Amino acid sequence: MSSVIIIGNGPAGISAALYTKRAGIDTTIIGRDDGALQKASEIENYYGFSDPITGADLITNGKEGAKRLGVRFVSDEVVGLTYTDKLTVITKSKEYMADSVIIATGTTRTTPQIPGMKDLEGRGISYCAICDAFFYRNLDVAVLGNGSYALHEAKELLATSHSVTILTNGKVPEVEFPDSVNVNTSPISAVSGTDSLESVQFTDGSSIMISGLFVAIGIAGSADLARKIGAQTNGNLIVVDQSMATTIPGLYAAGDCTGGLLQISKAVYEGAKAGTEVIKYIRNQANKISA
Image (cartoon, rainbow, N blue to C red; front, side):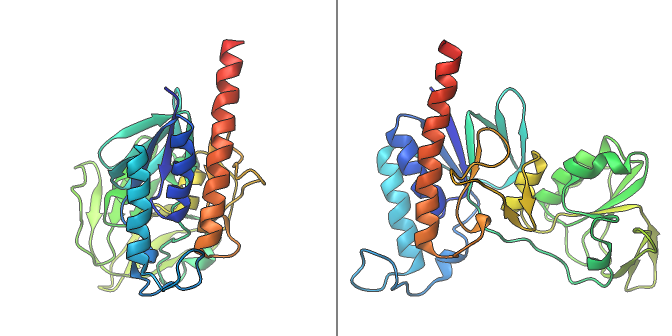
């Protein structure tokens, strides 16, 4: 059976799932949590509700409707997206292959307020290990983060870099890092370099010399995942066409991650559009194979 993986269990993701599942496509939604919508105390500008509804209740109603149709929900953190024989979604615990993938995880990106970071973005500061590891082969690099996303990025860099250091910036590591990775938990005071990144300074007066710093704080956002597979992005937004298709065949995006009006109604529409376009894409691929 053809399959689709939807990353994100908010309005855009669930809306897409309603269409793909009803079309007979095996549909799995992977989500870590319910996002910012669960914190909304009252929503009174959404069609179909005579009285205000909480964000948490709206999410619950959406999930129950999808589950009734047979949509599978997986609670896990997505840390990567790649292509093997099929599009492959990588989580903390497993890899999922599918004929098509829809990214619908919002726009959040955690950018640390560390002096020097902004000035050195693109000149030693990177947000995608699989994209930029090649440029730092046989060099000393570091990953800024303390969780599963940071671990994933560190593993990508170990294959090409001379050394990899985890910088937790004063936070306690949330996962166990391999012995081949150095771990420095000191708070960071600044990063510096002339034409490119050269060093990281800590509040205790110490410093380390590195050529690249890969930011992997918290969880991977939509644009982070899109960049990992080579899809076009614009800042923290994913570039899509009128069919919600990215520049990678079979990969679609919907909701806040595409920009525009950041409202539930827009997310639901784009999810529905992405879902119907995925149906067309999968059926067209099947016809090519059988022809």
